Length: 136
Image 1 (tube, rainbow, N blue to C red):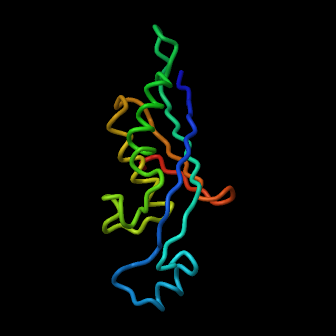
Image 2 (image 1 turned 135 degrees about the horizontal axis):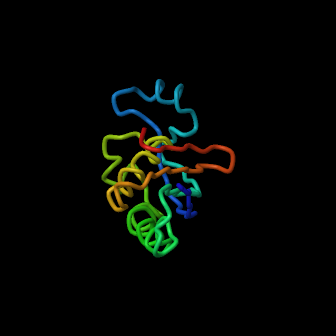
């Protein structure tokens, strides 16, 4: 029997959506106010969901304390109060859209969990705009 467990987390970060190979006008046309050269920020809400079999000995899919520590180390410590464009190496050449941030978070967490467990990342950029990525 497979069960999905989830943990919420939160971080604040700034970014600018733009492509270095486009001129300002094209970036402005595509990304609008998100292309602000002085950056802008979000209060990101993150839901990390793990799906797997319940361990017969512990009753857990994953120890939530272990998941909490992974999220803190891989996401909160790495991203909170940072500028994605300037301070987060994964975005040196990657546009920090919500979609790309979710994929980066997935790629940081997946190696830290047991391989038989499925991972899904849901990232809220605003209360109404969110993305989900499950590595498929």
